[in-house]
Every structure is written in C-alpha cells, then in structure tokens.
Length: 369
Image (cartoon, rainbow, N blue to C red; front, side):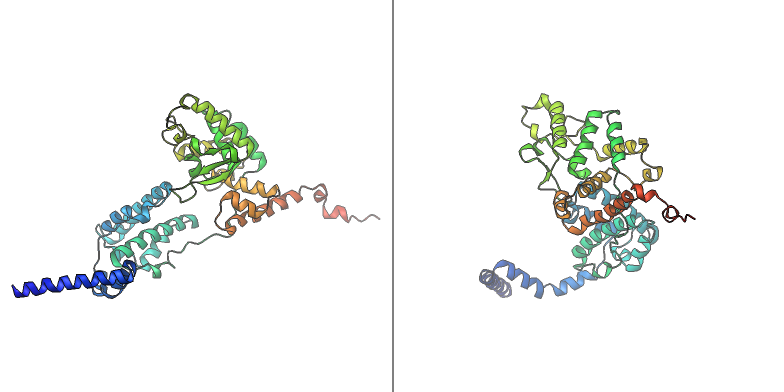
C-alpha cells in the first residue's frame, strides 16, 4: 500500500507541475519542448520498425495529404498507386515492407520505365506525396534524400499547343452540327471567353455567374473550398446566360436553382464527367480538316489547348503579360511567360507571309548585262 500511495502522490504532483508549466509558457510552447526532449527513445525505437506496404497505402488514402487533393488528382493518384504496388509485388514479393521499396535505387529503376517526361513527372509527383506522408507518419522522418530521385523535370523547350484562328473558326462551325449542339457550343464559347480549365468549367454552378462584374466564380486549381473570380468576355457571357435561361427556366424558382451545375446530364444535380467533354473535343479535332494529322495525335491539341489559345490571342491583341497573368490566374509570372516564345514563333510565321518575303535572293540581285 505505501508504494502505491507514493506512486499516486508522485503522479499527482507531476501532473500539477506540468499544468503549471503549460499555463506559464503556453500549451504550444510546452508541447513543442516536451516532444523535443521526451520521445527521443520512443521515436528511435519506432524508426527501426517496419510496416507492410499495404498498411501505408491504407493510411495514405485516409490522410489529409490525399484528401486535400482535387478529385481529378485523387483519381490519378489512385491509378498511380495501383501501378506502383503492382511493381513492388513483382519485384519484392506479395507482401513487401515499406522500407524495401523506398530506396533510391529501387525508385530510380521504377521511374526509368516511363518513356515520356510527362509520365515520369506524374509518377514522381505521386511518389513524393505518398512516401512523404508515409515516412512522416510511420518513421517520423522526411524524404529529403529521395527528393533528387523524385525530382520534377520541366521541359523548357516544350511549347504550349494552341489552335490557329482558322482551326478555331472551323471548330466553331462543326460544334453546331453535332449532338447536344447548344450545350457544346456554349462550352466552347465559355472556354474561349474565359481561359478556364476543364475541371473549373465542369463545376460551374448557376450562382457562379456574376453579370454585374462580368465574371464567373471558379474553383481554382487545387482549391476545393473557395472560389476565385474569373473575367469573361461579353459575347461569351451572353451565350452562357442564354443557355442557362433556356436550360433551367423551368426550375428558376426552386430553392436549389443557384446550386445547379450549368453543364449536366441530370438537370444540374451533378456535373458532366470530364470524359464527356474530352471526347466531344477529340471528335471535333479529328473532324477538322484545317488541323494536320500530326496535331491530332495524343498529347498534341486537346481541350486544354483552348486555354493556351485564350492567352496567346490576348498577347497578340496587345494585352501586356502582367494583365494576362491575372486573367489566367497564374501564381507565377514564369507560367505566363511561356506564351512569349509561342507568340514569337507566330510573328516569324506572319512576317514570312509578307509579299516582299516571297521574293528570292537571286531575284533581288539579278545581274542584268
């Protein structure tokens, strides 16, 4: 009994002392110091433990690192996870441990199978997120030494692909002839009048249109919570408003009218799937005679090329690069400056169309005896 009494007394005294210290220095400072001084032996013991890869996968999908991603990124990362786990099992057996697959050599060999830089970058971005979260949670460490292996390499020579004006004119004609012509025509003009991304267009709701400020509200890249204002041209705004009026006139007085998705297959309850829009534009591109066959291949012209076209023709119209940055909602000016190189290529093509440029050098200096 005396021993038990002494233990209890000591614990009570310790608890009172800790509460006084937390009150004196603040709970945040107190806990930070406790973690620095106390758990070293515990953490060291945990760092020597290993866990099955499957446990890391389950934790990652439930973690904040995954949950804060945009739906499109979550879908892409789930696909990348399946490919990575399959590779790990092929190389390490059916039940590999996490530490077996996070060596620099193993990851380098895995990424080496990617034939395109863009594919490699997607895999590296996924691995940085997955392994960063897993190492922090299970081993209380970061992936500092692996960041060089999992680097994201940018192809500085790759130009954004944009439609020519002739190609856009043909697409505007073709879109009127297919199924859901009114909807698809409005989608096209919304892209051309705003420069927004596909994911942003899909989640547009009726209440996101603000005619008084000539703008729409969009969920920006990577932002799931709040919306950002995005300007829209007058003609695109008129087309969008006319479509909403036609499409949702019958439910204008319902309580959820403003929450209806503008582009939808079920009366605005849910947005169109991105594949619906992608397939529609792929069909238009394939049908357009003004687009060369080489530009119809994968990773060439696509829906996203409409965003590049929006920026490029702003530049051609004399809008300065800083205003274009704001209209595109780019975080960094360097993201906007890539269009300068493409615009320079357009100028070279244009100047070669000058009548005097058609003259041959021999014609200019022809010797007459």
